[in-house]
Image 1 (cartoon, one colour):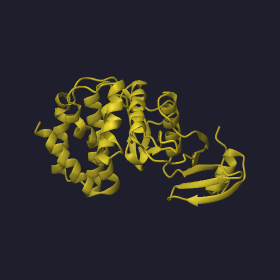
Image 2 (tube, rainbow, N blue to C red; image 1 turned 120 degrees about the vertical axis):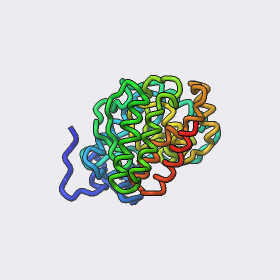
Image 3 (cartoon, rainbow, N blue to C red; image 1 turned 180 degrees about the horizontal axis):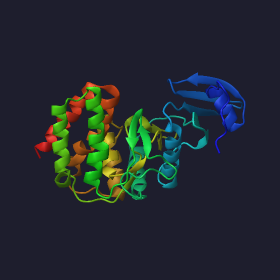
Length: 291
């Protein structure tokens, strides 16, 4: 059972509680992240959860990714409903060899599989999060139907409720979802996804090798993780893809499907950050309808 937090506890006190070591320094990195130095010089990362269940969902995701044996994730030193303490990754610079390693590692992660599309990690949550946005993990046996309902239209509805997307524009996404069975390419088994694989969640260690952080892990289509790397950029992306295909070649036409898989993160960003991402998602949806 997680240890109960002390009233008014801060990140340093949380780090001391979970590691059992005194704290010698703190460096705040953001509203929710603090680098805490322990007595003896070792540092840990302390994250404060904001949404109910957020920490539990992240811990379950980190452990599921680690259980694949394919990718490196920071070790969890302790957690409760408010705080997550993990090892701190000492950062370095990526290179082409490390990027190819990332591709091969992602192929191994995806191949580890999931019980179903939408399956949460063991011990994870049905009602989880991607960033600050809600993400519902509902099992589905058919990827186009599941993706349409739970990874596209779910966020279209939220965006309409917020006024970021107008009802006439929502119809564009609905038409794309109707065509998904024809646009989705060959059927694939459920892959074990990181789920929020933008460049900021790939950390290059001091040895240059890649680590994955902050997952929104669930069962999904492997092309979705790769499409997110394309959307927000990744150093040496061509080498990442080459390493991936050395292990697990992608189905023919995958490059034509990148936009379909980007609808999910674009609509999440529209919900979180506003109209600009909604316009970008609309452009992608309209392009898909011309195929």
